[in-house]
Image (cartoon, rainbow, N blue to C red; front, side):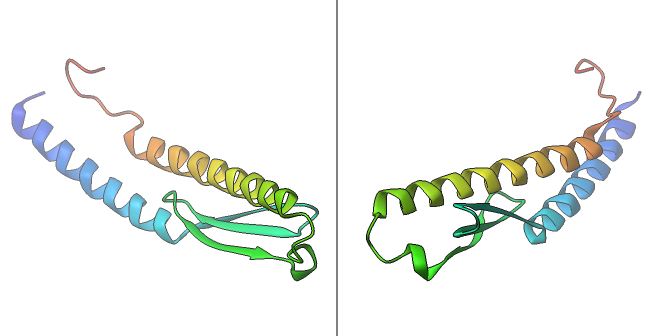
Length: 102
């Protein structure tokens, strides 16, 4: 494989990765905890889009439980988002043949 071919392959790969990253920033996943009392929506680029809390559990009687539910739902959503991101980026890089790295 000559240098020109490697450069062209790298440019193509960069374009594909940028498209996937753009797509991931608009794709969302949702996770809940507390039987749906807390709902977290995360984007597949690793950011949070929203957190919704059922007013019935936000009455201040058990803040620790509410905080735990938020953390649980957030972690679930971020794990789902990370899995999708890894899978989609893997599609771009699968079969990549770079001399010395494969």
